[in-house]
Length: 263
Image (cartoon, rainbow, N blue to C red; front, side, top):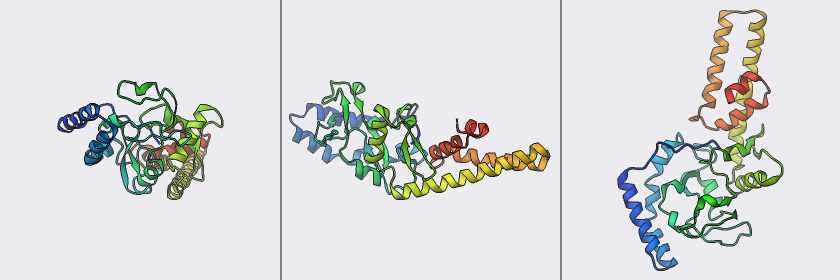
């Protein structure tokens, strides 16, 4: 998971006007069945935004960073539309008024979206209507759109996602997210493990060349080092699959130059 920066991105005005009108219908609806029918009748709306959302994340799942290892990519409602299951697995009330709000959308691989479904636990200040600010909620799911949230998980050589901490609220959120989004899905772990091996090999080869060049400097060897560093930097780019895993591997080496690239 890496931070998804949505600043500077906005759907086209026609889509915004259409969804604003639907949101007004939801707010003015007399009861929940009517609201649900409006949502059901307009399910194509968020699908229309899929390509736009993918353009923000370099075609990657916003949660897993996978492009095709996490099954078909879906448009996920971060806060569920009709039902929101708490820690006790009981419905605490969905976020119907956000059904057509694009900032509530995330791109998610099918394996994660199916697991997530209606899960959305809130520790405090649960919002149940458009007049109660969602900004006051203490939610369990880590949000890729929140820069601080992505810092609460890391990766290991087995390709597994793990919480940074072992206790406390940060641990609870990370653990809930990893399990609730199926982030240790078998194919994901295997793909991240392959990336870890690839970057570890590159780091080892680079360090060996650096040591040799320090003992016996050569222009040719300096060129080799430059090429290895470029390969590593390409794997760290936001457009690369599993770039967060690459960064975790670089930091784990303890080498100052590798950590600097990961920063």
